[in-house]
Image (cartoon, rainbow, N blue to C red; front, side):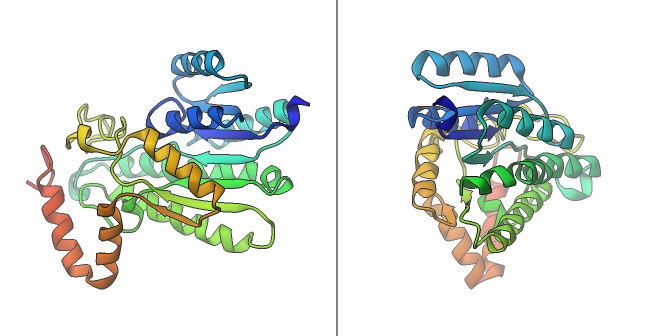
Length: 271
C-alpha cells in the first residue's frame, strides 16, 4: 500500500542543501512533503521530481517561523501519508553585520527561522516520528560550534539548534528515534547571497568564492550516509573539523584565526 512507503519532510526545500536532499530522498524512493515560502519554486520542484521518480510529492507554502504554518504542514502531511519517517530541519537564513551596527530585529528574524522553525516542526512531528522510530535531522553549521564575527545571530541560532537537539536526543534515547546534527561547513548555496545586512535587507552577493565550495549534492549524499549510519554528528570539510578542534585546544588562537579569515572576505564587516 502506498501509505506504507516511507516519507521525508524537508523545510526550505527549494534551494541549496534542501533541494539536494529532496532529490536524494526521491532517488531513495521516499515520498516527500516539502515546505517553502516560494510556492512557484515548489511547483517547479514538484514537477521535476515527478518526472524523474515514481513517488508522491506534497508541497506546502508556508513560513517555518510561524508556529501555525508548521502545525498545518505537519497535520496535512500526516493526513495524506499517515506517517513521518524523516524530518530534515533545513530552512535557514544568515546575516552579515556587526552586532553593534545591527538592528536587533535582524537577530530575531534569523532566530525565528533557524531555531524556532526547527522547534515548531520538531514539536508537531515528534509523536509521528516516534511511532515509526524515525529520524530527526538538524542542518546546523560549524558556526554552531565556533562563533563567527559578523554573524552573531546566525551563530547563536546554530548553537541553539545544537543544544536543543542534543538535549532532545538524550530525552528520547529509549524511544528508538535517531537524531543527527549535521554541520556542512561552507557549501555552494544561496544562503550568503540572501543573508541579511544590518538593516534586515538581503545583501545580494556572496562575500566568498562559491565555486571553491562543496556542492549541495555532495552534502546531501554525506548527510544521508550519516542518517543510515545513525550518527549523532556529521562535521564536514577538513576546515570545519580543524576549527572545532582548535577551539577546544586554544580558544584564543581560534579567535585570532577566525578574525583573520572573516576579515579577508569580500566587503568584510571587519574592515
